Image (cartoon, rainbow, N blue to C red; front, side, top):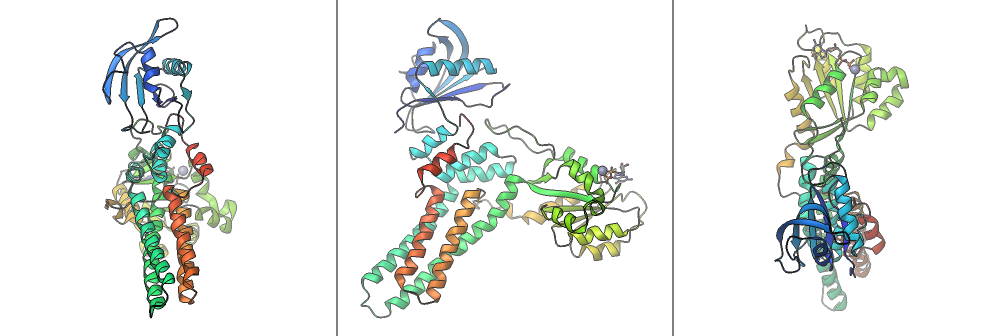
Length: 458
Ligand code: GDP
Ligand code: ZN
């Protein structure tokens, strides 16, 4: 199936301390050996590293000093022979190296093709391949954890277990359809069916609940800072950004782009809605009207409403409270270093149970409390649990929802006293939908489309 050898630059383009050209396929070792002067790569042991020079075989010109990692099939990422040529980097030299191996018969890899081969050769399943992609894109430590767990096959194992449960139930039903002569068999079968489908249904429901957190991990909690002019919104934004720059990991291949408004608070990534937008909310109500501002704010996952401790509450403040009262809200009473003129009792009434935090941004007081409030609002300690495999992939979430509705139909069919073979169809459909998550029942076109989303060289 994959009889050609592919090659690509596997490190991010641009300035880097090292660059890696990776080859995978039957000819990988042979091709590398033709340009390498260190040792005879066709004779060395698998999983060894070799120092030497790269020579252009046409001109005998020395191109690079390199370290070569040689890994023979099948214990490699793609399950094919893999050669990684590590050089000093600089775009020019990595490109030159790539050109050389292409001239010698390798083909330029398509985006994601290394991972696709790993999948096609049975090294990983589809959800794991998608985890590789998530890993490459992960912006925070927690998001990285989730992707690594998925890569580790936790999600796959869970899905496979649920599928196993379903298929066993179906088999059970089948037997009973074939031997209907036993007494009560129909009733018994239906009660087993109901129990099993309900079990699986609930497990999926749990996964989807965690998926909500998964989305937050990946995309960040979109957060709007609102309040009257001069209460300290910009100061808050600056404080959060200065103290909690988004963590960018050093794992090769992960994105190094830092989005300025992306901060990480105790593992909770916040996407602070762009600064310009935040500034505009200073008089958001006057500007766009109550209804429209309510609409705009609804799109935020979290609202930080800032008040000034040194001023009495105004009607504008009260109006803001009204706008955000049914959203996730944290109220900040800022400028506690100044005399208290704000009526705290009224603030507590207006906040209707949402957390209230006092800060003096200028004296750097209360910031810990704010961070604590944000963290507990979203995770309530749940993130500590190690055995949770989050679902954070949109495709998986859609499939889980579909499987749930198939099981729901099965359950109501049982309730309605429908014949067993009709119920069985719904259960089998749920089984097959779950199979699409791990790639057992997936179409080729989907596979192509998924892998094409990878970056080149992965
Ligand atoms: P914004 O208009 O809501 O964005 O408010 P700014 O962040 O621009 O702050 C307005 C003014 O209040 C600035 O002069 C800040 O230095 C000041 N300020 C912000 N936080 C505090 C605080 O906690 N205490 C005091 N005394 N002044 C503050
Ligand atoms: Zn401002």
